[in-house]
Amino acid sequence: VTGGCVVLYAISLLLSGGAVLSGGLFSFLAPSGRSLLVLGASGQLPVFELGHWWTVLSASWLHAGLLHIVFNVMWIRQLAPAVGELYGAGRMVIIYTVAGVVGFTLSSVAGETMGWIPIPFLQGAQLTVGASAPIFGLLGSLVYYGRRTGSSLAGNQAWSYALPLFLFGFIMPGVDNYAHGGGFLGGYLAALWLDPLRPERV
Image (cartoon, rainbow, N blue to C red; front, top):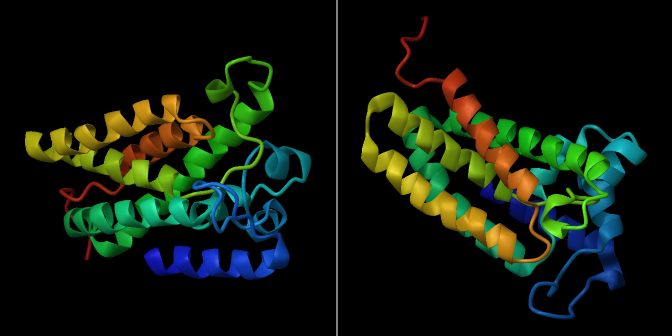
């Protein structure tokens, strides 16, 4: 997962050419919107205007700047091994993917239907990328694991990460809150589907 994100970030910079942004802290080494659109950025514009429905699957692997990918990779490196240990490595990737699809689907639909709301963080996204939706999905899977096993430690630890990150999204401009909420829900539902305590068939 980490390798895929890093490789695609490098490709997005190469495709940007001279259009790489380097203005402020958050836009330092930011790929151009065009390169992100080509590689599979999601949101209202790609999904509803261009008909690129598959971008709800690809957007989780793209990032909008150096700081963006550094923070997301740090979270992946912290959460993915824990989820992989509880559910298995293959199931962790499935949870990551499902959470991204649910998160970016919700964000794109909100961008299409909620654009009239005057509050920016409730409008949905026109163009969106990042691993934060599946990261919230990993947190959702840990919350489910805590509820399923009765382990308050796992669930409480996941909530202690998720709640401040949710609140941060309402304070910081440009954060895709619908993707975060949808990702959390998608991760929780994927964990329910991939219940690690259910006996498996041979």
